[in-house]
Amino acid sequence: MKKEIKPFGEIELSRKLLQAIGDMGFEEPSPIQAKTIPLVLTGADVIGQAQTGTGKTAAFGIPTIEKIKETERRIQALVLSPTRELAIQTAEELNKIGRYKRIFTLPVYGGQSIDRQIRALRRGVHILVGTPGRLLDHIQRGTVSLKDVRTLILDEADEMLDMGFIDDIETIVSSIPLADRQTLLFSATMPEPIERLAHRYMKEPQKIAVSKENLTVPLIEQFYYETRDKLEGLTRVLDGEDTGKTIVFCRTKRGVDDLTAALETRGYLSGGLHGDLSQQQRDRVMKKFREGKLDILIATDVAARGIDIDDITHVINYDIPQDHESYVHRIGRTGRAGRAGIAMTFIEPREYRQLRLIMKLAKTKIVRRELPSASDILERQKDTVRERLLQVLQKNRYDEYHTIISDVAAEGDYDLVDIAAAALKLSVEGPERRDEAVENNLTDTGGAPGMVRLFLNIGRAQKIRPSDIVRSIADEADIPGNIIGVINIYDKFTFVEVPQDVAEHVMSAMHKATVKGFKVNVEPARKR
Ligand code: AMP
Image 1: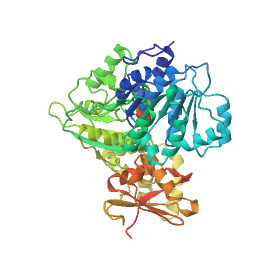
Image 2 (image 1 turned 180 degrees about the vertical axis):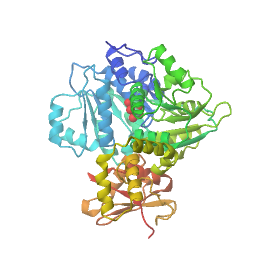
Image 3 (image 1 turned 90 degrees about the vertical axis):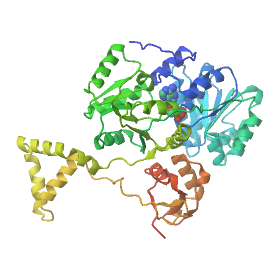
Image 4 (image 1 turned 60 degrees about the vertical axis):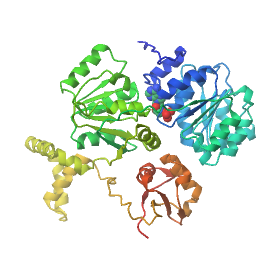
């Protein structure tokens, strides 16, 4: 069956784009999109103050792709990106938006074989996304021509500035005649050099900023969890917390479907709610939730709008809201009628800045919390575990495990109670892994006042330079490079100081990250 094509808010778009946006699961334009897309479609130069998590990529991607002539496979739009990760992500998103229109986007960045990029470029692309250094390299080799570029996008301009790309950017930008191009600039902050850049290289740019409307934040407890594995994080919270009726917010319809399926398979009583479901299906889910037959309702912002339930104990932002207004609306679903309520937000390391902006604009404090540990969860589940253990014993079907236990017992190092406890732990928690909840002692790391000194297990032996450390931390943790303090590189390890308020965030962001291809382990340094 062909899927129905739905409008995208008030914005008029071609069928092929609407179809792609529908596939991506977007239900309505994000606030920045609602303002940016119509303006860009008129041909205006636009400055957007927005960061990751607001939907900024689609904000410039949708109108840019709408304007591209698909029959001409030449570079008609150029996106400058500060990092390889962002370039790849952006290209992926643009390829999805341009899927039905058959618009091809290629990312080019340093570190990847240039020959491979040249071969891909020869096949012809409509949009090129590149880091400034590598782009210049291609331009100088003549493997990239910018003469057909009509839309130029500077993404995360403040980041590019921090990383020292300003000269490269100016060279690239000034090689495309101002009269021929529309220029869009996105930046989380607007420092003076960015203002100057905009003034010199843009035509009467229209500024779009987040609204500063004053909102009343409900008086409820607000926490955030930072993790790269949100599903694991969410299940730990659901297992470790005393939750009643809970609403979990996802960004897209697809997100709702995926999470509902994942939670159902794990045995949680949950149901999904979004705009692609029939009225009847929605009513059914709502009825069950109201009556307490479902504990968890998973919804998009749009679908949750009509919900009016008083006894919701937890609101969980599985995806970070696109702006502070949405944050305040979402969390206002709990703590009603004088009841207590808790709001929790999951973020990935890259979304930290968006979280800080939400706190600032909503004038609220969202406190960092660590995920419940296995022992917290066990504490709550002791009775269930005991029950299950007894059931297994009564059914008496575990002969094949006898030999392992009797072998271990025969070795004589452990007594039977310890072996049984270890076996139970294995069945409840799975195999041993690094305990992330190890107490982080950040109070005395030997850093300068206000700074935390971190230890990284890489150094000169891996040809690490200070710039690698700065770039990698700034990139992974999405913090400005200039707030990173003293860096001391030794043969096998490195010390780096970061401000106290971002130290825990930097550690999570760098956990399992790589620097120059080397996996790093980051810990608070020991006192000198
Ligand atoms: P960005 O701010 O561009 O990094 O986007 C953050 C995430 O939001 C990406 O996963 C996008 O695919 C998603 N996104 C962008 N626009 C929308 C929208 N209108 N509705 C739902 N999700 C969106």
